[in-house]
Image (tube, rainbow, N blue to C red; front, side):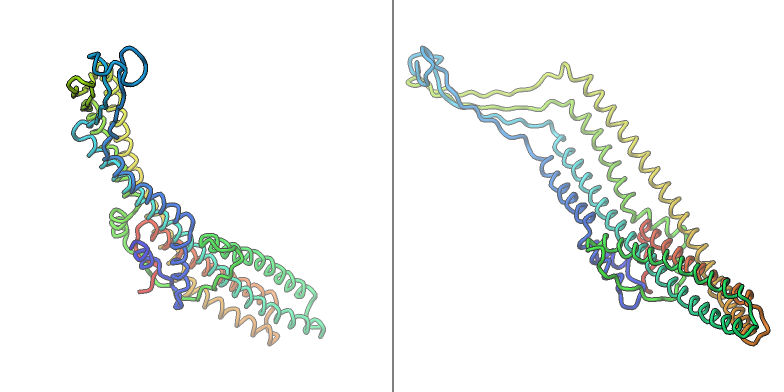
Length: 411
């Protein structure tokens, strides 16, 4: 059921749903998730163990008079006998119930840890997906810029051969082409790394082909900070696990106090006396806690300190979560503002300036350096736009991980 919940919150932004399929595959195959699931299943077996009674004891034996063999003296000597005795220890009232509740809290914490692992794996998968999207988009930008520079290089060569240009223009164009090749090599490395990370999270061979993310128009998806804070308080598995830890330590304090109550052992037995009447025996064993008071006081103090530590840790986790939410919210808000600036103003303006400079150069009215400068400005504007887009998506993914809000899915 939680996997369905995750899919609802981590749907793909592309029309074909490639990311959603990858998320589903990760939930089914990722080794971290599978290990956490087994740890949860293991923790669920503990409450029954904690609530069970100690095993009963059975004693079988004989007492011989006049020799070591069984039955010697039986029926003639009053002390000779053969029989058995059974005993059962009964913990003091409340101990078993507290132990079961403690185990249930541990199982609850394991369940929250399992959910936290699922959320973490999905968030890492989505972050790698958006890194891959960024790499592909930037490679396209470089390809367009390279085509432009190749065109400029041909124009400069033609003008140089006609005696209208200088060798400096050819050198500048070639230098820009070399810089583009260096950027392309770096982006190819990022693309291959992102694909390998996705495959590793899916437990697939690292060279498995990963579909290219489809281009999508970004949309404003940030919720208010107060709404994100409230969702995190209600949903965050890390905070929920801390709550289970607090309740567990509080129950452990109660159990430590209960440990001072002595456990009761009852026993009953039967002995065959030969020709004499049989012997029946019953007894109750009650420990005398003469030497355990100091140990119990120390145990109670230990658990009280652990409970206070758990409460402080819960508070620290909540404070850290709120800070991380605000930090990612601020990063996402800044990235969104940059996106709007670049998409509505800087990219269109630099494109127009580049078109004008190129037209002037082709008509013989402009300089080659002006075209190169406008081409560099256009490349920088597009690179900054795609970087802001990646940062925006990554901030949304991290906010989803922290709060469970649906920020990257389709409306």
